[in-house]
Length: 575
Image (cartoon, rainbow, N blue to C red):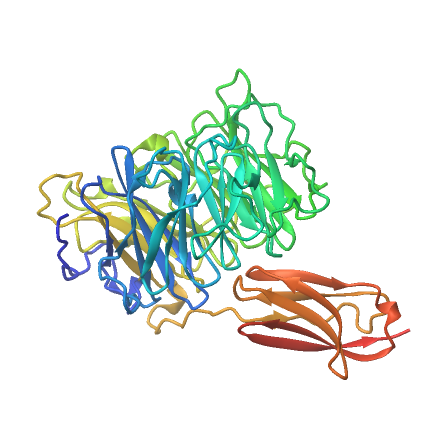
């Protein structure tokens, strides 16, 4: 492996103003991780946020039939977490696994990073595996997930992982398994897992109550469906035994195995699933979306077969991003341009947008579609902005001589018109090291953006041997010239009850800062618990207490408690 050289940032070029970057980050970026040079560069990257404001930065190297992974933990100011290697932590190399390249990663309730993929240098190569790295950069040995999906009747490619209390959920083909951080199967779960859904690329989301929802698109004569499984391994009460069918067609059930399936939160108690499929005897590719509840019912406001978010004769790099307001951004590459459209929680497009999308680079002729493995381009380089808009980044090769490169970042409104608080054409970043392409843009949750790109020393002999990930931070224009504000750390919060006074029932909203278990209780003035409900999963949850007519009228207290602390509010029960 080549030893990387930390190179000082160069002076900003005329295309870049120094104040565009955070004062904590060099204008030309800093090296945050290195993937072994046996791989042909950093092909994908992902940032995973932590409640503390820190983040994990994942870079993925690709070469031949293998992937290599480097993980780094850094703070919002660019400082590397204590105990972490300066060039990142190298995870185990594995066989390439198509759609699970980025989806097979998750952070659990203790800050451990999980990776789920098949073929961790064992035979057979389709045996599902898991790997764990602790927050202090100590890796627990790669361990066998102890169930063979193929032998147990599972089929398909790709794996997905989602956090669980004390461990994680793993999905592979038509099987679902729960693992502990000790590398063992969770108590009560069978060695071969439990039935999930038949899929070539499953997607997972925690259900907020200790269980998980798994979604899969058709690939072998099945229809797209979802299933909810409780933490005990049992199918959630009220859900169809064979799963909730999300669409009845018309399609030919031949989803592209290179395109991942998607499952995203859509407000309290709802999820949106997305999958790509061609229509029968048609060159038009569709991205279909369907919204359904955690109770196992489709959203009646949506069509029975879902919403066609993308309709094009050329789709690569399909990306689905939750907008934070119940809707989703649907993004893709087509005809050498990046396109996007925005679907709201009610299943309608924002005004001016359709399934044809709009060009995210606007009229810029210098936009360049990533040239590496176009059939496996796993994402459009974008992220949701805090206001429901979009951050979009791309390369500007055509502006520069062959030996240089700049990167372009645009801030867009929810309807993809330019955000008036930023330059209409976006802002340019000139890397200190010779770059090979932008790999990720990520919201800093304060209106700014983190930008990461692949780069390598200027004396690299073989042009395709780039394996370094460099990164900087761009403050929002409203904060330029001011010190960056600290990252917002979520806190436990409990809303006022509705109604108050209450008679037969009431509802409250509780917001959890992380995925650790919590409990919402109703207590009398003596401190005795009269009602109790478990809640789990970072974010907002609706909690309802019913049959309050059996309690004596008077003053009560609602209390939400979690390891981090508690929150209380007063409740009056009247007759």
